[in-house]
Image 1 (cartoon, one colour):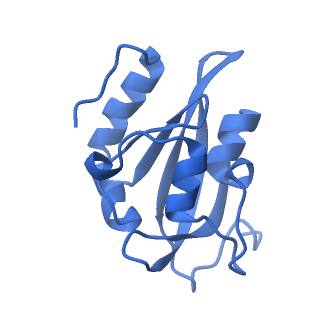
Image 2 (cartoon, helix red, strand yellow):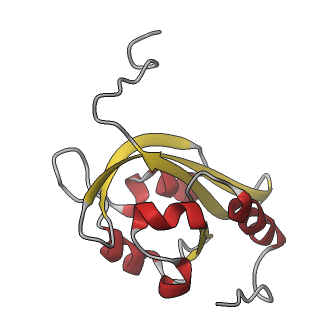
Length: 144
């Protein structure tokens, strides 16, 4: 699938290029929360390729992956690390669960980073994520 760059902000184009070279799963959205790219490393976690999925609005990708909290309750887009980065312009990190394309529920650690082309212009957000081990403890939460 060819990516149409004509209507994209330069920072999104560059972020996509960097994400495509990362070994860490990455998920890129524009300022409206529309999925514009996820990299090859994300495919095994998400259970889909970007070529299959393509660009989709936040309301759609939330239905595809069903982000959940530890108790299995739904997490609103604005509460995801990616959503905090996008809607509040602040980096965020947390663990969450998703339902992968293979039907499996996966525990993820995710970090959302706002993409700012100028101090007052947010053009999107990038999430880096990986499968978390439920036995892992957060050293920052333990004061280490």
